[in-house]
Length: 338
Image (tube, rainbow, N blue to C red; front, side, top):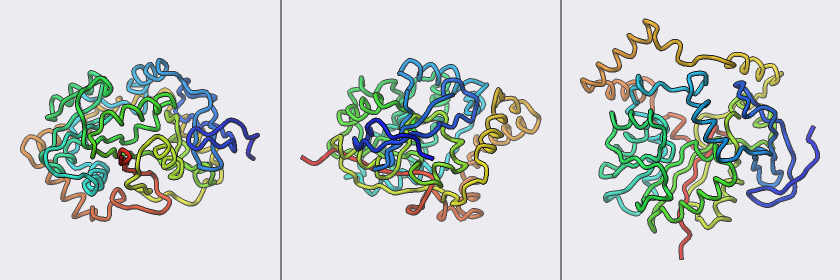
């Protein structure tokens, strides 16, 4: 049952908005008891009472990257993937929309482990790669494996970029953060520059999305996008849409019989877990040691390529597929022509 409609939609300004429960599946107090405002017209969803910038920064610094969190990454022991399929899918798409293949300045906003570096270099060999990141532990990983320039604030950088990548970042911004980002991107792009954005496909107007098992991935997202709403946000704010479509694996059309039970079991599984506990097991140490050796002798990349493109027929990988009810939305935007 849909509760009483209220508030205006951030994307299309419609008043036809209803609310739904936020699914907090990890036991994170910051996101407990929240609700989502969902637009009936364009499908945009947003957390009703969003945390402010200070709360968000505190959450990511103290919770999201801590060893108590499911998303914890031990960057000291990490060996980057040189053939990340999502990054290659994103940059292969971008290649169709850049005006020149000469030396490009490419920025990844929120690069995580930094796997986009190899994809960018494979597809744009003459590019200069920039990462926007503040976490010191992650930066130490970048300096070890990548030839990148690291910036901590795009608005204070005098550099102009030909390609900017935001891969599964936008959904983590609050609305004020999106407003600021939209202005900053305009001033950070070259005249012919493009922005490649990928977000989860969360059109909660449909039962498959609203009651599907993937709702366990709500946390820690603040915004939830449909293709319509994402398109509306950028057009309204002075951008041209070069490409927009769904991508990634197809969403299972069967909704669970008891989604509440699935949510509870997921929450119980991840509550107070220590993601890094298994890293010191004999199996993990041996596996990591083999990866280090293969990486040093230059075989890791070739074995990964053989696995993805020969054994798994990588050309049919979901990250290169578009259309239908898929897991993510991929969009390319640029400045409006004058």
